[in-house]
Length: 303
Ligand code: CP
Ligand code: NVA
Image 1 (cartoon, helix red, strand yellow):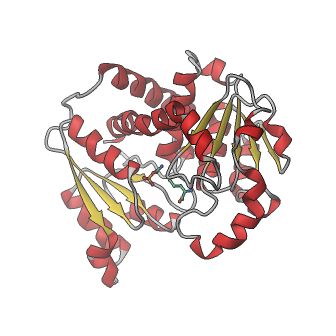
Image 2 (cartoon, rainbow, N blue to C red; image 1 turned 135 degrees about the vertical axis):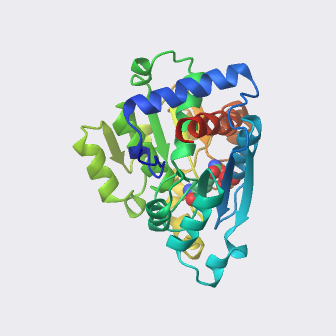
């Protein structure tokens, strides 16, 4: 059987996404453990810092009866030039799965090419699929949505930088046929190819630079203006993205029942005010918690 990887939301079918989310809800209800992974080990390889992804995957493996091994990319022989293909083949002999947080998406694809174990994207410059699965779970939970059909009726808005989070949001909107609006300056739009792929599937995605489009939004989501790996552009990004902050004024335009999401970490006072973070603490931290439940469902699906 072909090894199944999760590098992009597009690696999952509509049915698989629904299955993972349904499973995540069941696992959340059951609280802790299902002892399925007796003796299995997941490698967690990080080229960039992480709080949520690192801890939720490690705890997920523990709660499933397995183990995890956190590997800092600076401390393995890759740092001294060992190839991805050789590293992947070595990992495949020790581990049962490998999660990678990398700068370059193509490096994760190369790992997957040479791995005989499932490879999971834990964030690249291109996508963050595990995050976006947890986001959809959170939207369903907090808006009390019981069917995937009703999910299509919500107006989901992302405001800010057209980054990796946005790419995965576009992809999941295409697969689940969601009503998604991206509000971003024209300087920081998402990559054309991800949009083209979504459009080919008939996705209902709107892209605008007009903040007024937040009107009637049921979900208002943002992320940092400067993602990891883009630090040299910070000043320029701030200048273009400043009008796209989530603050009390902006939220007056959204639906009165709107929830605010942020994948975290947040820069309070930049993409979101401290007041909004605190007011919407429940939705933002439920979103963080749901990483754990989704991680478990993803691992049970792949490993
Ligand atoms: N949202 C997210 O992936 O958080 P970390 O960078 O802390 O893992
Ligand atoms: N877009 C952010 C997400 C962090 C979870 C980044 O890539 O840094």
